[in-house]
Length: 444
Image (tube, rainbow, N blue to C red; front, side, top):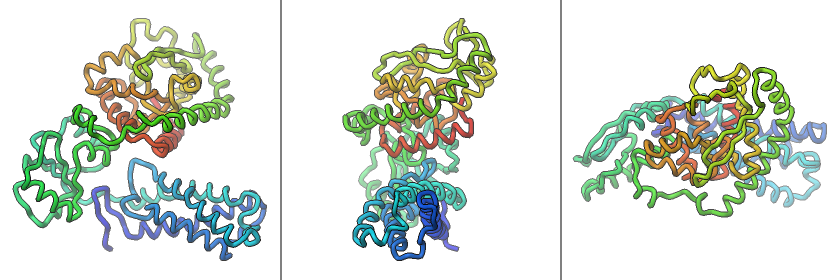
C-alpha cells in the first residue's frame, strides 16, 4: 500500500477514509442523541434534510483542511481546528434550513435539537481525530535534516529535539556544494542564524523548494516541530523582525482575553465550591498552620503581587530561605502531595485572576528570589513578564514540572512561543490539555 510521507510522519491513505466514515457515523449519533435529549424521539436520519446537512458539514470540514494530510497529525496540538470548522458550518446549515422552510425540520431541528447536535458533533469530531491520529501515526521514514551554516545546535536544543519523540537525523554543512536533482533521503533544510546563503546556494535552495523540500530558519523549524522559541539560538535582530507577538499591541485581543478570564474564573469558583470547602477542611486537620498560603510572585511588567494557594507544605517550611521545590520534598504534607498532583492547591488563584494580577493562561509567575538570578543566567528571561502570568500555560502542559535553571530555560522557550503565537484557539488548546493533565494527576 502506498504511503503519503512528510517530515511529520507517515500516513495510510485509509486514514482520511476512516475520518470521513467516523464523521458520518458520529454526526448521526449526535443528532440521535440530541433528539432523545430534547424530543424523547428518534431522529429522521434517512431524510433528505439530514442528508443535506451532512453534506454541508463534510464539505465544510474538507474546505477547512480536516481531511488533508498536512493537518491530520499536528502533534502535540489537539485537532481543535476541527471544532471551529464545525462551528462555522452551522452558518450554511442554517441557511439551508431556512431555504427549505421550517416545516421540513420539525422533527430534526425543533426545540434546540440542532445546536445540541452540532455541539456534540464538534466534541465527537475532535475526540475521534485524536484517537485516529494516534492509531494511524507511524514513525517517519529515515530522512535527514540538513543544517546549513557555521554553527551547530546547542546541547539544550538537541535535548529538546530528542525529547520531542521524533528521531531527527542531522547532517551539518557549512555550505551547499552540489546542485543535485535527487533530494531523496532529505527531509528539510534548516538555515542556521549566522549563515547568509551565497547566490549559488540561493539557486540550489530555490530548486529544492520548487521540488517540495521544506526550508526553514532555525527558529521557524523549532516553532513548527517543537512548538517553542529557541532562545539560545536567536538574537535581538530576530525579535525585531519576527512575525507574531500580536497580543502585545492588540487592545481588542487583550480585552477579550480579560473578559474571558473573569467569566471563566467565576465559573470555576462556583463549580469548585464543594471541592474548595472539603480541601480547606482537610488542610486544616492534616497539619498545623493556616489553610491558605500566600507568597510574593513577579507579575506583568515586573510588578510583584501576592499569590494565594492552599497550603501544601509544613508551616515555616522556608525558615532558612527560599529554595526550589523538588521531587519527594519532605516539606510537603500528606494531603499536599494529592493537592499538587491534582492542582487543586491552585484553585484560590482564581481570586488573583479576578483582581487582575493574573490571567487564566500565561507564563507561571515565579518568585522574585529566583527571577533576579534567572534573568542573569537565561537570555531574554524577563520577556515572560510582558504579559500577565497564568494559572496554567503552554509550558505547563508541554513540559513536566522542574525546579532548576535548566528547567526554567526550557519552560521559557514554551512561554515565548505562547506570547508570539497567542490566539483564542491556542488558549482553548491549553485549557483542554490542562484538563487532561489534571485528570491524570500529572501536576508537580
